[in-house]
Image: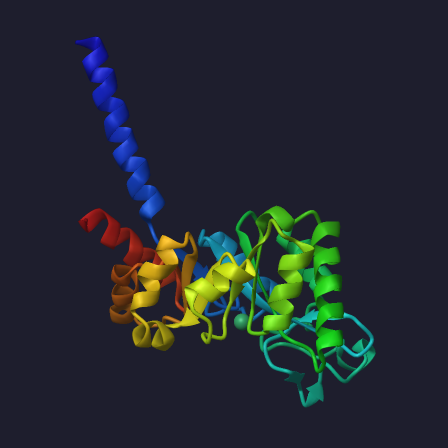
Amino acid sequence: MKKFLLIMTCHMLNLLSLTAQDKVQIIAHRGYWQSRGSAQNSIAALEGANRIRVYGSEFDVQMTVDNVLVVNHDGSIKGININRSPYSVLKDSTLTNGEKIPTLREYLEAAKHTDIRLIFELKPSDTPERTREAVRLSVEMVREKKLMHRTEFITFGLDAGKELIRLVPDAAVYYLSGDLSPKELKNLGFAGLDYNYNVMRKHPEWFKQAKALGLAINVWTVNDLTLMREMIDAGADFITTDIPNDALIFVSSKLSAN
Ligand code: MG
């Protein structure tokens, strides 16, 4: 009788852990920037994402002409082109919450005090050579800060993706552009796809194909709960969203309803 109870308990725990594993993960797009005092790609947004316990916080990285990596989405800040300007020209530019534009070094320094995944988007530079240099310096910086085990890379640039895979074969690298099939991504060594939801709607067969190939599926930028339901039901493993707090509540209520 005792043995029977033990087996039953283990069986139930297995079921529970399977459910937990199956749970879709939420990634805060540019951090949790919709909270008070925050801004997109700010250190406050990273800390906010950590506070609400999402799986990961996404951020965008680009390189100045004198090889300083900074965290910013747009190619320019306050009219200054990041790729073509030295860091000294843009270093005092402020985000909407008053923070100065963070360097990657400062951002990762702050990330050391968090324990969520760092979803590192590397923006391609002006030329393939400059992009490879940005990849090399990014990898070096993440290694220096001892954060590689928590970092996943995403990029629109195929050159950048290939170089990341070459330099850090163990890291998870995802491709964003939406123009390659799961089979093509697998052959190139990507860990998965990270595509716009419209791409996945156009290619519903890619959910199944990616799963069969052992690739993870991330979908961006899902800011509507009906769409979120659609993507989760179709098989998304990760949802990248500007409403991470609502998404967490939605996912946990969906899980308990199942
Ligand atoms: Mg991004």
